[in-house]
Length: 185
Image (tube, rainbow, N blue to C red; front, side):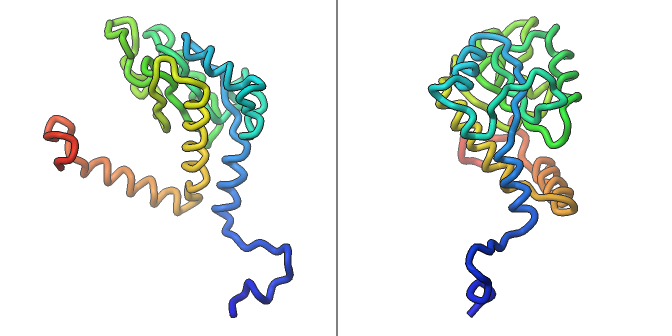
């Protein structure tokens, strides 16, 4: 016999972290940052067929101060990189980034001096979304993965401890030039 049996019906037990995670994941507001053909697929995601409102994302925000998710859709030129960083810096904490499309993730087919070879050189990326261009369904899947990540984010001192553990794991990881094959360590 636990405490659950003694409580009246309609009472829900949870932790503050889980409740805050649920509220955060249910109200993610994206900033518009469409740079190329991937932006058309991002606009389709906001339309009635894919209905981004069911994810708590009714409106794509034009102001970075009202947004907490940046979807970088398309290739980023060297001239656009400082603007992207400025918009990211203007967003309030906590903030997340999705690199939408192969051009935003790795530079894509544009392997030249004018295109940034991966937006992660400019801002930290939480979710990489492959494809050229990725379909709106793929963007929905990436947003659901981001919701899962947001829901399980620790708060307060737990957040600092998790950040320190992730930093230590990154420092102890084998450099990519030492790796041999996919399964070797």
